[in-house]
Length: 107
Image (cartoon, rainbow, N blue to C red; front, side, top):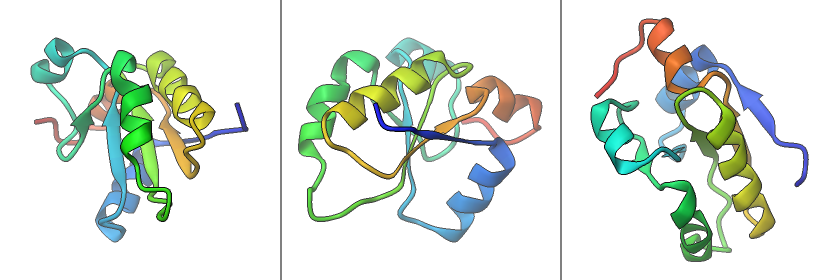
């Protein structure tokens, strides 16, 4: 995997406000996602990421931010996407836990 950078929650919040093209990918299970997630996130569990990567347009390079509950699956999700040629990926450092700890909204 190419070197993928981490983004902290406050920076992610800023990016989401400034750039409507940011796609936040929550790699947790649907059950975990339903228990609470960052508003605007889409749920793409680890097992579905390869298929998701195939559907991404090769003509655009949107900013993708992967995340999970803490960081482990977020990093794995970034690695899977990268292995399928997806670029412009960040990993949310600390995942949903860090987002909640910062007092940011959860849907």
